[in-house]
Amino acid sequence: MHGDRKDNRIYSVFFPSEPRDFPFRRSVRTLLRALHIFSTGTLLAGYIFNQPTTILEPWLWASVITGLLLLATDVHASMAVLFELRGLAIIIKTGLLLLALVLVEIRMQLLLTILLIGVFSSHMPKRYRHKIFLIDKRIIPDDRNG
Image: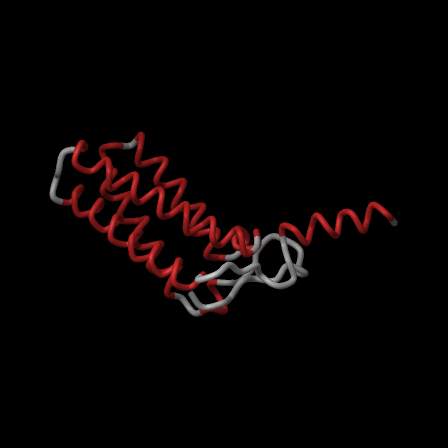
């Protein structure tokens, strides 16, 4: 019995019944999203227009850092995001980005695919975007706007 209570406390740390919040959450996420779209758009355009890697490297880092910061704000709210459709899209996009590091000859196509996955996963209806897969039905998705 005691182990069950401890397990429930640990469970609630990772999957709180109410998603955690922080001050100015929506404003912070909007700013991060704008920076992420700007940096990823610039990065993809750089590859489309065949710019040298030295020019594109800072945009790659900006894309990675802003993406990780956005993910961190989601994970802070609840680890449930990783099991939602939008979280699975993030995992797929990360895998494709890792492939882009080694498959240089198709890097532009991989980056374009990442962009398309991001657009569709971000703009699909909330009931699909926040649908939870593969785990316990007690987990509550963070379906707040922003």
